[in-house]
Image 1 (cartoon, rainbow, N blue to C red):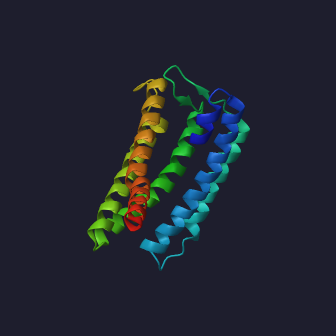
Image 2: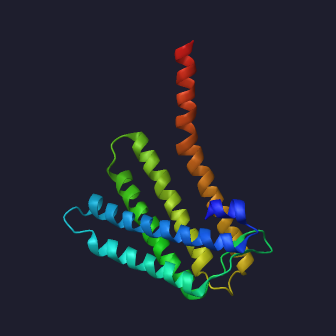
Image 3: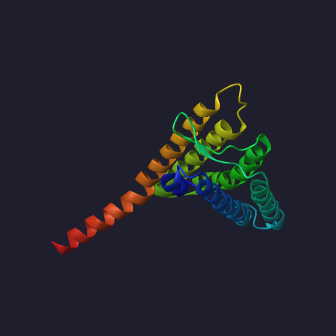
Length: 189
C-alpha cells in the first residue's frame, strides 16, 4: 500500500488496485504468521486451524473490498483515507492483529529464550515495533470516530507507520550495509 500511496496518491483507481494487492499480501502474511506461531511456539499442535482462519478472514476481506469498492483519497491532513466501512475496518484490523500479533508472539518468545545479547536486543526491538503497530491499528481502524476525527486518525496512523519503518530501516537494514561497506574498504587498505 505504501508503494501505491507514493506513486498514485492522486489516482483513486490505482490506490484501489494497490489496496487489493495489499490485502492479498496481508492475507499471506497472516497465514504465514499463524504457521510460524504454531511451528515455533506450539510444535505439537497442527497449524491448519489457525491458517484456515487467517485465509478465510483474508479472502473475506478481499471479496468485501471488491464488493463495496471503497474509493481511497487524500484527506485534508495529507493522509490517505481508505474510505472503509466500519465492518471492513474491523475485518482488516482482525487480519492485521493476526499478522502483527503472531510476529509479536514469536519475537517475545525469542527475547525471553535467547542467550545472546544481540538476539535479545533485536527480538526486543521487533516485539516493541509489533506492539506499536498493534496500537496504531487500534487508533486507525477501531477507535470510535467520535473520540478522534478521521483526518487526525489517518495522520497519526501514517506518522506511526513512518516511524516504524524508519526504526526498522535504521536498525536492521542500514547497519549491515554500512558494516559490509566498512569491511570491504578495510580489506582493500
